[in-house]
Length: 397
Image 1 (tube, rainbow, N blue to C red):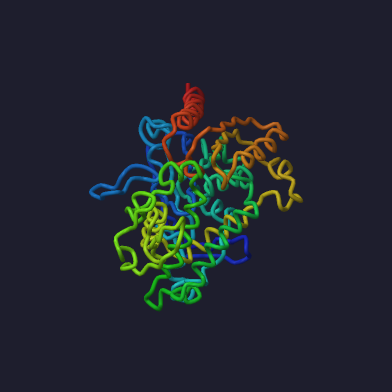
Image 2: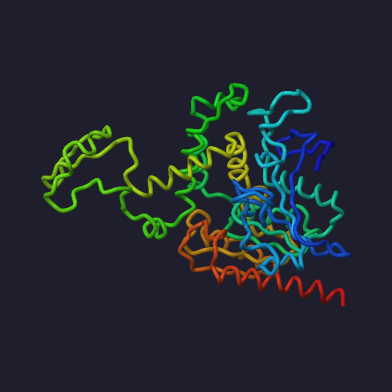
């Protein structure tokens, strides 16, 4: 959907002549009361469910959650997936032309925040004729958007489902984001964010940024279970005292060291451990499809989000505006957005007498758990949405 009218941004700038990409699933009822907005995380898009006809590997990023008969049942709800401004999956972003200059935005794309995204989403809903959301739902950064919806447009949200999220980033999270951004910004192919005109992509920086991020999405338990210290190929002696074939690794540009009296050849360039191979694969794949400026923009939006800031850090005061009912879900091994951060939101909502359900799932998968199959997690979400659907159907009776 195209929007010509300028959208004022939190930074004081504005953006006009922009597009917002979205997908819908299911049918909007006559009263337009069964709409559910899905907000995406860092590297996702508006394609939240289903597959594209004739396209391989086109499954939506939350397909296990959304669809006919699934926890968010599209037989009962009209689900809307929206791609955020600044992204690289259809909505206007840094790789598009600025209508005022005719030049590609590049590094000149305006700073966007979670609040800006919510305002853009509200404009889309206005255009679709939807005044009230049965629910707004998101995980991670998407959960921040869901929370912000309840504060910016409390009268338009009946329920908010906030999964694996937080009321703001702690210093450690901001630090991880900054290291990833520096990897991109110091790539020689970045060219100050105007790499498009040079016909290059800062893939080296994107690879490293993704590798850093991916480490934080997995738990220590999962990494050890999936990879441990396993090597890609047998490069060490089969038994103590046995030497590898002469020059076997040195031929690959390696050097040698002495350990336990055994001369071990190793390479400083090649991938030796399976975890290294996995991270490089993830980095290579990411660098092929994601935009570097988009990565900088979205991680900054993560850093900036802090609804309690204007209340002197008092989250209870910040959430006093919310009138929606809430479901919050966290995962025990998620150290990037730990359960303690979800419990902060729960306590602040309870301080305001709000209706809150909270599920803390004992899952081994780390932050990525919110995207994966877990019967208890999916059952909790299903139960919550069944109660929403029942109330909608009961109100029509």
